[in-house]
Image 1 (cartoon, chains in turn red, blue):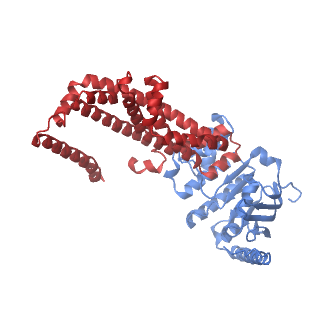
Image 2 (spheres, chains in turn purple, brown):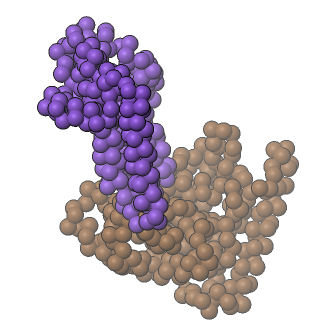
Image 3 (spheres, rainbow over the protein chains, first blue to last red):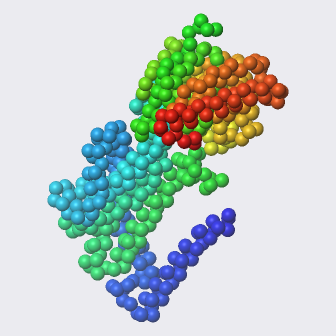
Length: 261
Length: 267
């Protein structure tokens, strides 16, 4: 077991090292200029020299992501609970949630920028992209409650609220957390897409805006550095949410059973 | 005994599901307070449906159900075929659920919880989660949850069917001990002749689907039953008698279904 765990960490690290070496050799052998492909070392230095600028942009993007995620979490769960209360509401609203989800966000963003301030538009984009997985998974969870437990709550005359808070929401928790895990990554994507759509028109200062801006200036090393930060942010968000999910489920859910021993 | 008001009375109860399956038809049952009654029948004969109708979890399509006032005050305990526990909650939280739902004060819950856990042999397991328990222990939690409201009527739907024989025998003994001390009325659904004879004072044998009460047998046996009773000649004789009644009930069901042209199959 321990060997396998070590392999799970060592192998990806080795792959990364190999990739960086090949990248570096390619730049040297073909003598590629930095505006075509910067060397890994140059990207790393850019990360340091532009650290202040990129750090500020990272904070701006992360803030948007976090706000979009929070809105998506609250909105998705609340909407799922609402749909779960009555078939009428579900049939009336669910199709539009799907339509909102399947319409490409890149196509909606320019329109939003007309009606909303750039900041609000970016936030709404992050929300639109992220809320659906929360809604869909929470709906699934709320509908998969053990029928006998529902009967038991009925036997003891449980109120609607008691059924919701003592039975349905706890029972749906694994699915809700799955939805949130997906939403975390998606809200970052939503924020980035909106920043790019806003482009120079927006007063944006996020990482995606930096990438667009650096692209105009042919500052390729900075584009790579910003991209690297975005990926790192996505990875951190994913692991953070996975860890929270594990903590919340470890006492009872099968998915968190083996890892706990 | 007969002059006492029955705790539950079913008259001509029928149940047809939305998909057209007729689970029960013309089912009559009267249960006296303090009795231990088993509903015995093959799988799919409608005995679980009958139990759910008694509990009020399901409404009958035809006929009437009358419950004594006591069942409203003290409630009904129901033990499902599966333990049906909340996996996210500890044993204590699962067992205390009925009281929590009725907004009983925490100070009152604690001693009742301790008492009922001790009664079903779950001392020291209050903080355990269901997945840490064996099948038999989970069933004990389920029984404790049903008992914590001190119900006048305890309904059990093949609670031990999924357990191994050793565990089942032990839970049978523990259930009898509980019944002798607390004396709730018990309606116990089972497909096992041996289990029904071991536990009950009275056995109602159901026909094939749609289920009706075909035979109503009183089990003459010592009040306290134990391992010795399980191997006694008296026990064997009772089992033979009940098996015979069950066989007749099955045969009757087939004839009835055949004559009605329903093409009823023995499942």
